[in-house]
Length: 328
Ligand SMILES: NC(=O)c1ccc[n+]([C@@H]2O[C@H](COP(=O)([O-])OP(=O)(O)OC[C@H]3O[C@@H](n4cnc5c(N)ncnc54)[C@H](OP(=O)(O)O)[C@@H]3O)[C@@H](O)[C@H]2O)c1
Image (cartoon, rainbow, N blue to C red; front, side, top):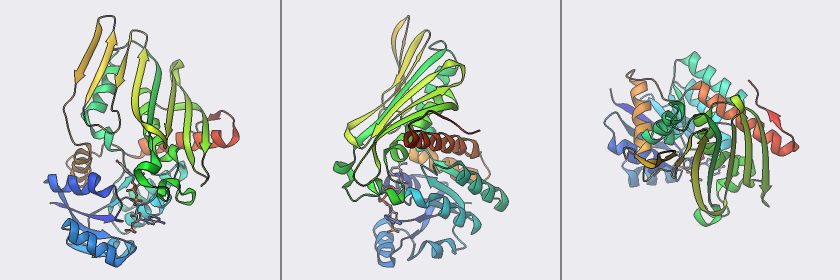
């Protein structure tokens, strides 16, 4: 069985995330595209060789030949359309961040369980072998006991996307924390587990979204993590874990063009090469294989809940100015 995918929206991310992956994959292909605007859907289908075009998201969900839906809508629409797709009998790969509210995540995974559908939050970097390698180095004791995690993801948002982009729209849940900080939170959780308490500070822009966000996270066993993210600086991304016997650095932790992990220990510096791979293809193949019953999805309810609980606590902290416990 080849998985037939439908895409909700003509989003900019589609080309990189799903269209390229589907072209390279033997497990699935894109059957349909939906847009709020029929003419836009039809032009998009023509340009990208997609057989079916729909002028509303509901029409695509009513197509019985569509097995799985990729949701690349603005953040505020992720939970609603994931649940609508699940209730229409579709498996769902939803772009990050699924939601900054744990209750949304629980409701969507409950719906998926009830309907017998799969749901995964699309953190493509988690599918890259570099991520598993870095986590394995930490858990295998390559740097001793981990003590600090530090990570950053930032880029000039207006220069890259323009000021009227969804990232600057508060009503669509734009903002640096949800857009890029969600990667930092995911990276910290991959390296160190679930945060217990968080403190967040942000810089708000004129449109009401956070243009910069810094977070401190207290983890189990005395581990501390800090991250910075934003839309108002030059491009910067890094992940570092410092332990009792050394440290490791991932220079491209989230958008990975040259994979590798740098390790410093008492024996000096070592660059650990990782297999080069397209994380979007790995994500697409993992989810398509899961639908075909060949493998479990890499990310499920527990990961999405951990993300949402931490993001929710960070938003509450930045709003109140207090340190906030992460709900269990
Ligand atoms: N994993 C990654 O590498 C990655 C990279 C970039 C973005 N993302 C995620 O992907 C999602 C989309 O990001 P993007 O930059 O691709 O967005 P985008 O280009 O702005 O596209 C969003 C699409 O949503 C649809 N839409 C529905 N309601 C809308 C509204 N009220 N305002 C604007 N658009 C609306 C539009 O499509 P129609 O008009 O056709 O319906 C629009 O093209 C976000 O959740 C983002 O976090 C992930």
